[in-house]
Amino acid sequence: MSASVGGLVRSLTGRPEPRAARRPVRRSRVALNLGLGTVALLWLFPFLWAVYASLRSYDETARRGYVSLPEALTLDNYAAAWLQADLPRYFLNSALVVVPSVVIVLVLSSVVAFSLSRVPARLGLGLLMLFAAGNLLPPQAIAVPLHRLFLALPVPAPLSDNGVLYDQHVGLVLIHVAFQLGFCTLVLGAWMRTLPRELVEAAVIDGASHLRALWHVVLPLCRPALAALAVLQVTWIYNDFFWGLVLMRTGDKRPMTSALNSLKGEYFTDTNLLAAGAVMAALPTLVVFLVLRRHFARGLTLGSVRG
Image 1 (cartoon, helix red, strand yellow):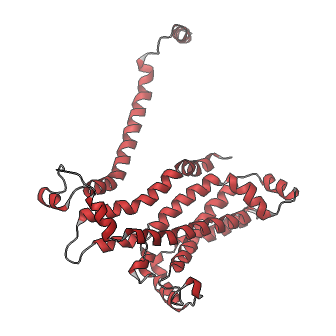
Image 2: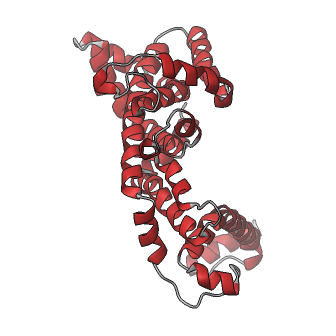
Image 3: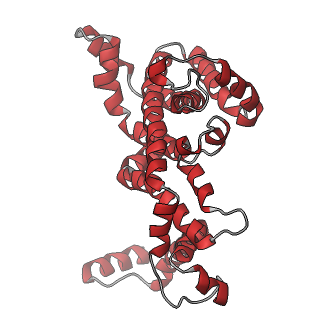
């Protein structure tokens, strides 16, 4: 009784509660923030160190060491890396692979996930697991068969200048679509099952086809999931190095991840110049994340609280 009367008096007089009552909350909040800040710094440390190294000249770091205060910071390494590695060409190569791959993966996975969400739950879950099982196969296990297949598989002239899939951007697009389709179908299928079935049924009763119901009713509700998948797919496909090395022979056709090899010499490598190239290579994925960060966060968290 006395505690409730004391609380009422404090609320009427405007006096704060005793510090002892708020101390556990403050300590836990401070500990949480410190822990999250420490993890974030550890996670960002390699990137921040690369940025710091890219702003210093190699002569300075050779004299004073990498762990030292800089005499001067300069952007000369970025200009040299941009011209020496011919980065615009490699950015274009990556765009020719990433953009079609992401668009095709999201379109196909949306259609497949919508179809699987209409079948019985057990059958749909089994098919989704079958799609996801393809991602469990390591790429190295099928590198040799795919290399031989791409050398022998004929392709029409508009899609290939040598008549086969090997050493062509369309080959990389097909590989990424095949490997990423299962994961996107699994995520979108789980998301679409949380949507009320009555929405699609009402659209069909009003005269809309299933494809139109998917485009005008279901996909707008899946926008957070699509944005999250778009960010992940751009990051994964853009950062891929293995398939660009195995299935591309011409150096000028390889994606951005292979461009950094041109900054490495046979007997000497300017690590500061290499760090500048790596920082510029990481910028596209950073821009995509910043543009879609709100939808990305919703896509990762909203589905977990839906009933």
